[in-house]
Image (cartoon, rainbow, N blue to C red; front, side, top):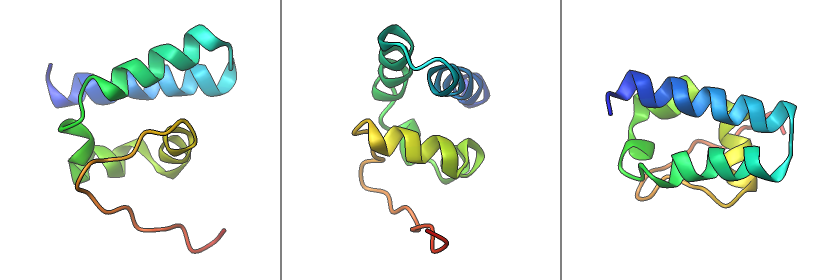
Length: 75
């Protein structure tokens, strides 16, 4: 899958799960993220997903492997 397509699919799935937090939506977003662990290490993907979506992923136990996320100093 092309990186841009993955980014769009992740954004859509996470935004849907945030807006409609039913179990199927949450599972779909987590499945997409878990299906591409190497892509989650990409600085570009991490930047373009945004802090809100990363916070949601972190709340559901999904973290980039081998990467470093700069903590949000405003919280």
